[in-house]
Amino acid sequence: MEVAKTISELRTVIKSARQAGKAIGLVPTMGCLHAGHLSLIRRAKRESDFVVVSIFVNPTQFGPNEDFSKYPRTLEADIIGCAEAGADLVFAPTTDEFYPAGASTLITVGSVAEKLCGEFRPGHFQGVATVVAMLFHAVQCDVAIFGQKDLQQLAVIRQMTRDLCFPVRIIGHETIRETNGVAMSSRNRYLSPEQLEQATAIPAALAAAKALSKTGITDAARLREVARTVIASQPALKPQYCEIVGLETMTPVASTAGQRCAIAIACHLGSTRLIDNALL
Ligand code: AMP
Picture 1 (cartoon, rainbow, N blue to C red):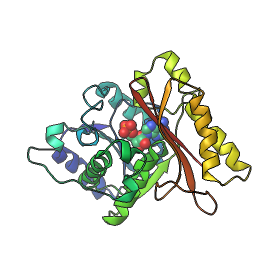
Picture 2 (cartoon, rainbow, N blue to C red):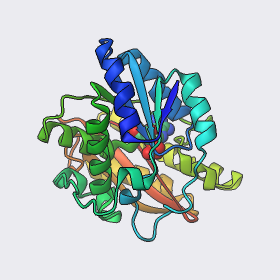
Picture 3 (cartoon, rainbow, N blue to C red):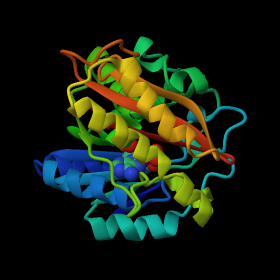
């Protein structure tokens, strides 16, 4: 497995993979890799012939009071994990390499990016869409794998890919969970063992809504309420949102009847922000 630190090194390696007729798969990450990321890499290996993992803590997707400077950076271990999971190339640019002085273009995706996390993290999806578009251009991938764990991000990327005619197939990959059901996240490192236990109320809330939905209830207010009650039973969790949304629009719905929906939750636990979701 090779490691490229610059766009020009990346392009050289990609060019020879392309010339060898290989389909290129991309897994964009911010590093601090866990089993969820490694599962994405293995999926990319099944969907393409040459897997590129990008590792870049993207400053433009963090708000001024968010955790950009303290976001965990574990590049050495990440490189080993990528090699073990079957990646062919790690692309780990510096911030200056990826955003040279004077860079000013930003991509705004529209309404799919406005609700849920978009409401609480202004500018976040603009940063995400911009960095992913840059990666698509730099890597020239045929397929890109994203986690369903970040469901709104996946919807934003799908919209941008359609709108900007990127010839990239977008795959959403299932959420990988800790043994206690909490969705794996690089930010779980911030949690104490007690908080990791308290966080189980989030998957429990999702499961309660899903179970009610399976009984045939389609009223979004009822589904939302059952989940909110479970979240409220754990006072350490400070919810930001708990909504039933349409899968494509990421906008709250009144009923799940006749459309693909999900329940999406964001909570603070201490100073850590956690998100999770389940398809209904
Ligand atoms: P991040 O490094 O957190 O920006 O995530 C990089 C990619 O990994 C994104 O597509 C995430 O949705 C995905 N991802 C993060 N956590 C998980 C998880 N627990 N299961 C599956 N994919 C995940």
